[in-house]
Amino acid sequence: MTRHFLRDDDLTPAEQSEVLDLAARLKEDRFAAQPLAGPQTVAVIFDKTSTRTRVSFATGIADLGGSPLIINPGESQLGAKESIADSARVLERMVAAIVWRTYAQAGLEEMAAGTRVPVVNALSDDFHPCQLLADLLTIREHKGTTSGLTLAFVGDGSNNMAQSYLLAGATAGMHVRVATPAGFDPDVQVVTDASRIAERTGGSAAVLVDPAEALHEADVVVTDTWVSMGQEEEKAARVAAFAGYTVDTALMAHAKPDAIFLHCLPAYRGLEVAADVIDGPQSVIWDEAENRLHAQKALLAWLLEANAKETA
Ligand code: CP
Ligand code: NVA
Image: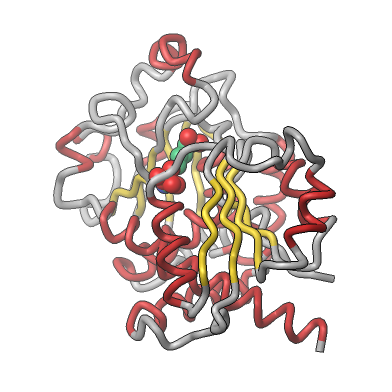
């Protein structure tokens, strides 16, 4: 069975830790792993726009000795003029891996089911697992560990980042608290899955309404846009619904004094986060953005090795 990375819990706790260890090593020695030497091509397909994901995958694939093939929104037949299954069968004849940013998680599952090369979720409506690997690497760097730490997410509990924090945070042994207004809860199954993982890792998963309660004594504070890609027409209603959920200095005061602040970016200063928090001394957002590169290189190298062992 080909290993893919479609959601955060596709890696076990031990595997997630291995990938993060490798990411730290590749950050120290950027060209140490060359699994794509040839160069072999990796298809990086975007149905939604991107800055960080696009640049970090393109750079990382080149660092690994490979050649990135970036396919921008509207540039391929995928999904529109050709089925996902047919595209998957064509791509696997040529590329070493498929990285895809899309809408429906079901599309990624269909792609993965139809191909022998690893498929990586570069953001879907439901999850953003590559971002979480970068976030966990950043937390390790600043806090020394992830295990036992409390992470508070404030904002849209139903979005891809909140759901990925639940799964990846639980996998990393963290206590994850999501604070979100009524009507924006994460998917019940995701919370159940996170809680089940947390039972093994010593973490926990909780959904709350009050942001101050979520931040109480937290080690890590995170937020994300209130208006995810594809929701642009709902912007006015969403800005109204999330009133009171801005991460500002008053809210940050509920967290531990040495708490760090993360945001996957792009950010909207004055909406989900105040400028003096995101640009302040607790913010580690630039390390977080850089770590996309190291984490994704580690993930690709790990998946390629796992699949080589599988077929050996
Ligand atoms: N955080 C993130 O995925 O950024 P992009 O949308 O710019 O890729
Ligand atoms: N929740 C955001 C994340 C962007 C990286 C979105 O899906 O637009």
